[in-house]
Image 1: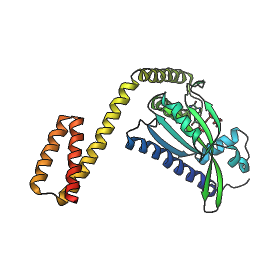
Image 2 (image 1 turned 120 degrees about the vertical axis):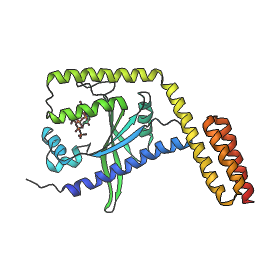
Image 3 (image 1 turned 180 degrees about the horizontal axis):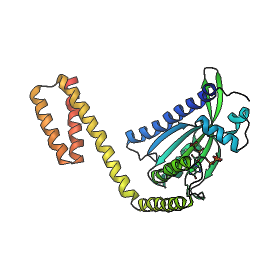
Image 4 (image 1 turned 30 degrees about the horizontal axis):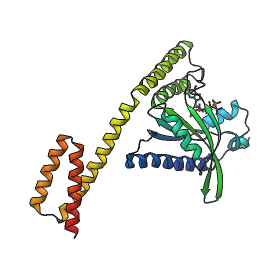
Length: 263
Ligand code: 0O2
């Protein structure tokens, strides 16, 4: 039997996971910095374990030399969303990218699996530039809500514990949990706007406060001590008052002060 060099085989997949993580996390970070709503809540990635690759190859009768061509989820990332409504936005984001090609999509949200599993899967081909040249690597992107993920992670652990044969009674309970998770997603959708508005306000306030603190820090190097004491007092008063407009005005004032000192 052919011995698989796992280190060599897995290297491009590990690199692919790292690059995909960086790309999708950067998108999310950029949205937050710009104060735009991000449909991505978080992104995780994983490399399929050799035991799991071999189990799948055995189950699907894939010979070891065909593993790279036929097992498409060795590299996997998971994009988690707060709301079901965010999922189509993420799907569109992936479809539009020029640095990866979608070759298959599986909608287990509309077509829930008999286990109760809900998630959207996209199989992509990702061009990777390695030290040895270009290589096209398959990868799976799973997109789901936090509620779907909570359920799937728990069920996956039980599936692993019982080697795929979860006792019927536990399966029934898991089905109930899947319905509860679905209900949670449906209920959350009804107050989505309220939640996202509150989050956007928090994000704007956090960015503003970070700006103010940076300005204060810079002014410490150049401004008079008396001025700095007044600034400190005003900042504490405004921070406790929670008035966004006043915070904005204060930041403007700091910008002007910094400009004057620069001149
Ligand atoms: P791991 O540990 O993440 O590698 P399959 O025949 O189902 O193994 P296929 O044909 O690629 O594989 O299909 P599918 O079902 O589209 O995608 C497989 C992956 O989806 C699984 O990978 C899981 O991550 C997830 N998944 C699919 N069905 C279920 C389910 O009923 N419960 C849970 N919890 N996850 C599911 P692996 O290989 O199982 O896991």
